[in-house]
Structures are given as C-alpha cells and as structure tokens.
Image: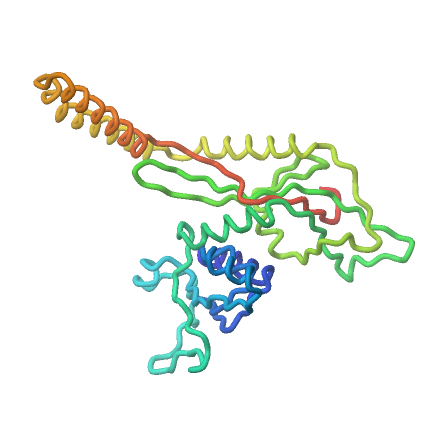
Length: 303
C-alpha cells in the first residue's frame, strides 16, 4: 500500500465521518476531526464521557497528517511527492492562520500505528456495506428499460509476515457472486467509480450463483494459493535465528540448573521455560491473514 493509496483511504474516511478539511496538498492534509472520528482515533474516553454527561460542546483534535514513510521523505523519494509538488527554492510554505487551532503533526504510512487505528475504526463502524454503482448518462435507458447489475463481494485483506520482524501487505480482491470470477484489482476498480448506498432507478439485480459464505471461502483459498508462491527465505532465516537463540539460552541456564538444588533449581527451570516460550513467540515465522472490511457491490453488466 503506497503513500497515494494511504492518502486516498484516509481522505475517504475523513469525508465519510464529516471531518473538516482545513488544508490539503498531494503530500499532506490538515484536518479538524468530527466528533465521530475523534472518538475513534484519539483515545480520549474520559473526555468524551465528560461531554456525554454534561452535554458540553465537544472540542475535537486537529492534526497535520503527512503521507509517506519518514525514511522515504528523508531520502527525497517519497511516493507522496510527485514531480513538481515541491515549492521552488525560497518560496513560502503555506501556514495555518495564527488564530487557527494547533495541528498535531504525524506521519501516516502503511504499517504506522495511526493507519492501524483507521483500519480498526473502519472494522468497527463499517465492516460490511452494500453499494451500487451510479449509472453513467451514456447508459441511460428509457422509462421502461432496465440495466442488469451483478453483485460482487469485495474484501480488503491484511496479510502479515511475522517473526522478530514484521511486514504487512494489503489485498483488495473481489469475486462475482454470479460467475465466481475473481478480480485481484477490485479495490482499484472501485476507486474509479461513483457509488451510492441506494438502488438506482431503472436497474434490476441479476440472481447470485454463489452464497456469501462460499464466495468468501473462494477468495480466501485464492489468496492462500497466491501467498504460497512467495519467497519464504525470510521464514527459513527466522527459524535458524530461533534455534540459535534457544541453543544459547539452554547453554546459559543448563549448567546453573545442574548445580542448583531444591527451590532454586525449580525457579531456574521455570525461568528457562518462560524465556524459551518468549523466544519461540518472538522468532517463530508465521503468516497471519485478516479481513479489514468487506462489502456487496452491485456493478452494471454480467460479471
């Protein structure tokens, strides 16, 4: 998930929650959060409990979110800064009015804690939606005509490759409930369409050939097959580090355990087991997969 995709996701979230955009550029946004977004993102339960009890007017937080990893921006290669987006030398940078709220600066990039909070908020508030593509004017039919729409199940999967290090990838896939065709670029397709939660006029829905349970199962199996084609050299290396750490732990504790007696021996054995479990959890390679959110998307045509 590159910086542009992160920015598009964040902007969609801010618009959906009614947050107030104060300033915007290809690389950042300054936003005053809506009460809904503030509750979800700022971790201020006591403040919102006070507002709910007293009925006081809420004062929400203001942030300046920059898109792209800090290391990329330091190297001058942030994908959030396309050619020509930087101001010429000596040009004044845009600034917030002196009387405006103080904006807390943060970097938002794939893997950042702030972006994880956006994902968690979406999971809670909009884990599954039903949407319809708005018909184009060119596709308009007479008052007695009707356009066929096919239902697609779209899902955003987050896959984590974890050991003593961690890497994550996002997959926005969709499957036609009529034909079972899987589209690995479904998320990108949707970003180019105008969607509405209401069924448009002069539209009829084609019958589904797949149940939601079976469709999700087919998406998961297809993603698993794709992941099996990945290079897992990192997992082999992590397993070697795990075994090496366990061997060093054993060589450290075993002589002490052999010399100890009674309660001291039992305490050392318990400590050895605890440290071995911690090392095993830290280094053992694993792949995790979770659904961030999903939806039923009705698109024109027979897909």
